[in-house]
Image (cartoon, rainbow, N blue to C red):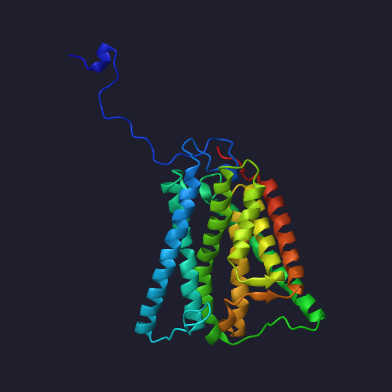
Length: 317
């Protein structure tokens, strides 16, 4: 006897499997990437609570791990301030590593709670666009160097030294290895959290990206310990990175500048041999804002020019 097709019915077999994660529809901008057919009002809230709660648990666990590392290695813990270890290089590496753990948390929350591809946090292409990221890194390095030069010039004109020094290769190399290996993950994790998760999470409620961009910048500034002009710098940085993420359809440009800025900043501290102050933030002289303005202008214009020339994708397909 013929199969079910002979009776005009459906073919025999197991039911078709449906994907857990659903991509946003074509034509979706970066800030709206959480608006899939499975989007519900509670999903961004539940995901945010899960990220925060899990990171708090990880931070507590990191304190216990730090204690064990201290016992095994013999490196004493400080027991005061924001530092964990008396060895500044070990302390920097440990704290950068803890921040980097935000990255899998955010990606996992997008998949588990919002049921969308984790790559939708990276860009409208559902992945990191590596060629575009490399181009942004080149622009970022140029902008950071020019910004540092402008800041040094302003400080010197005011009779203040920029703080450059050379402590020798013995002090510089161990710190440089930690910086180069961990800063890219630390900076990327912060971009996925503040420019990815927050902007797209609020994008599930607002059509206009600016409330999300501004709130992400406020949260980013609040998570740092700067005061005075330093708060202005971090807030403006957050606004620019959020706007570029939406404008270019992904996190490549924000990641590029964040990584370049942090590598150079930590690298200059490591070169001077004063790693004890690597994670200190506090007050920032107003002259530093001139250097930041140069950096932001060069990077912003450079990225937009290349994005237009390359016709960078800004909507999902």
